[in-house]
Amino acid sequence: IDRARLASFFDAYKDASGEKIDVYGMQRFCDDLEVDPSDMVMLVLAWRLDASAMAEFQRDEFQEGMVRIGVDSLDALKRRLPSLREEASDAASFRSLYAYAFEYARSSEPGQKSLALETAIEM
Image (tube, rainbow, N blue to C red; front, top):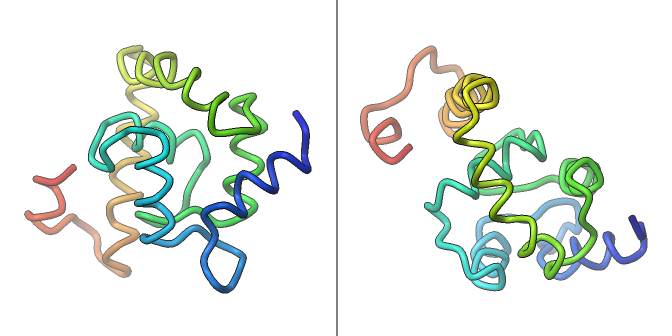
């Protein structure tokens, strides 16, 4: 993995603070990936990056997660999308993904012990 290339990959989508990809950067990221933001593969990607909040990636989450996935560019990630989709079908991975998704969805509603109906339906 080329760390400089990975940093440039993140920088293409970062917000003004430079430390995260916010909702606007996420939309551009999805557009460039040619993936709808509601596509299951985006949840799998967030899980693999261990993202702490919905619709954003912190710099360290993005960079370390992409290293774990084994990609350092948009093109490399596009080629990896089919295998990321397959991870949601694996029974063992699905359990972990499901547990992550619950916590991930709750991140949009701090302090909540359960999900709002609207959030659960969207997930």
